[in-house]
Length: 306
Picture 1 (cartoon, rainbow, N blue to C red):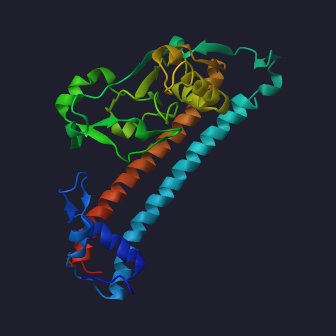
Picture 2 (picture 1 turned 180 degrees about the horizontal axis):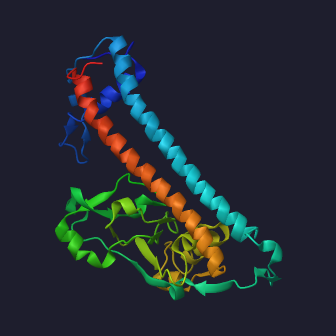
Picture 3 (picture 1 turned 30 degrees about the vertical axis):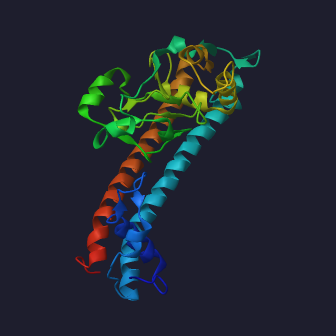
């Protein structure tokens, strides 16, 4: 038995992460750690100096992951602030020489999403629920993965090739916009992560595929997530039902104001660059987590000396 008193705190955290992998209980209704199994677990713990060295190695990976995560947040914030400066405060390039007519710059126009999209529709989940999910396969995006301006891989599900084929009609493509359409997370919206394509979506997530000739998808995404438009789309979701939900008809009729083609392209180029940088950082984090998790067992067992 191990007494964690006097144990290096970070080592203890990593140690438990490693040890708990081996004591998952299948007896409970919900798979997890059986307390009795944990109490009976016999372990070997190195001296405190070695504990500190092991923790230092693993913390290096976690620190890099956290730094990348913060950079991703900053990139999204820059894109958000640029949208506000250009399209809310109307301090866009050349605004000094642009006429404002009824509160809208000359040349800008209002369009419904249905007019500028080639696809607006949600997915579905094959029969079987969680039992169809596999350890590796095609990602199935659910509402828990979609946040405003952010995509979380926590709880990301995967389906087999067979189920993915059955869901081919809801395949996510590059530059698709993902919108949650039911429940407490309704109206959360993000760009589809290119690193996970080709993915599928379940019935709680809608794909908005913007026609690139009609509008820039990165601009449309930021417009949907702008404060005013977000309040508007949330009000749509709360109409006529005891359950918050967005229908295809609601989303298709949702209006946004499009700037001139040149200005929209300039913003889209900036936003696309920020998005790609975030994608690169997310891929780096995935590799760092894999490397850390591969190092964890041999470090804890003493197979690799520090």
